[in-house]
Length: 154
Image 1 (tube, rainbow, N blue to C red):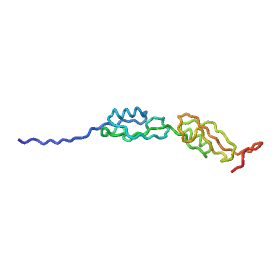
Image 2: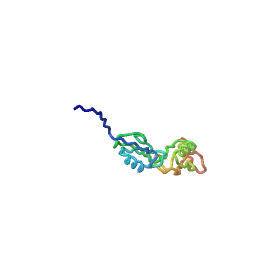
Image 3: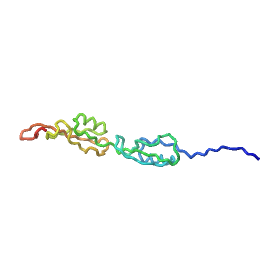
């Protein structure tokens, strides 16, 4: 007896990728695992976002992926102290505030290295500190003072 031919399409199971940008890394990992996916490579970068928060993911939230597929994450280390060396104090203050830090009262050092420009930053440029940390700059001056000082302009 003749039978009917039935076409059967087999597809691999898919999972919906959870949106994890803005979540804490631990929560993001849990959401990805619960969705049937795996956590892929994790890259850590300095960013104005709070340390430990996810700022990027390789597969868009809401998209479909093969079950078990890796989702790579980019996680914030928090902001780094910006390099404002050789900037004038006004520019340095704006850059520091835009990075999420508090601009402290500028100090001065009478050494004539680069009068009017930032020559030191505390905490050190490139270090990671919590938002709201006070960042103080030291500005070179070249003033002649009684009893010496001021050096020779360069």
